Image (cartoon, rainbow, N blue to C red; front, side, top):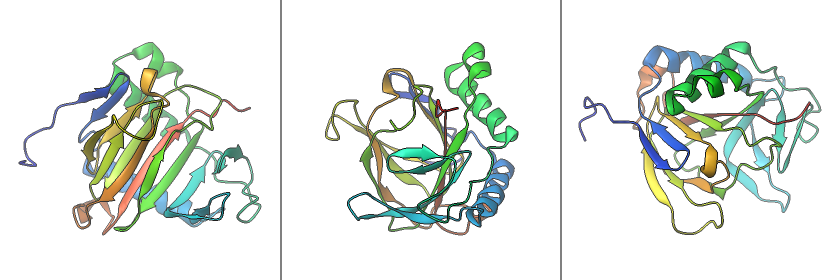
Length: 218
C-alpha cells in the first residue's frame, strides 16, 4: 500500500474504531518526549511480573494510577513504593479529542475524563497475549495511541481469546478506541514489524502504545 494514500477510519467491530494517521509527526514527538520523562520515574518503566511468576515482554510505565495484575493503586508497592506521576490535563484533552474523532459524539467526548494511562514499550521481540482490559470499575472507552514501529493488532470477541478475531496493522500516529459493545473485547499484539517507524517521531526503534482509561476509582 502506498503510504501517501490516506487510510480511511474503520469500525473493526461495534464500538471498536481504528483511525489511521490521527497524530501528526510533531504530536508524536511530544508524546515520545513525555513518555521518556515518565519512564525515568518517580516509578520507572519495568517489565511487569505476573502473579504466576512470568514476566511480560513489554515494558510498562503508568501515570495517574499504578497498574499491576490485576489492580490499580496510587503507590507502586511492587516496584519502589512511590506514587506514580500525576495524569496531566493535556492528556485528558487529547483523550477527549480522540473520542470525538472516533465516535463523533460531542457530549460523550466532553464527559470523558481518563485518569490513568498505561504506556507500553515494545521492542522487536515483545508481544502481548490476548486479554481484556477489565481491571477498571468503569466501562468508559479505552483510547489507544501508537508511535513508532507498526504492529499487528488482534481484535477479538468478548467471550474467548480464540477466534473469531480480526488482525489489523497499527502504524505510527494511529488511534484505536475500544468502547461500546467491544469495550471488553479480547485483544493483543502478536507481532511487531521492526524498523518500520519514522525516526522523525523521536523514536529510533520500537513501538510506544499509550492507552488511556477511566479507572472508576476515587
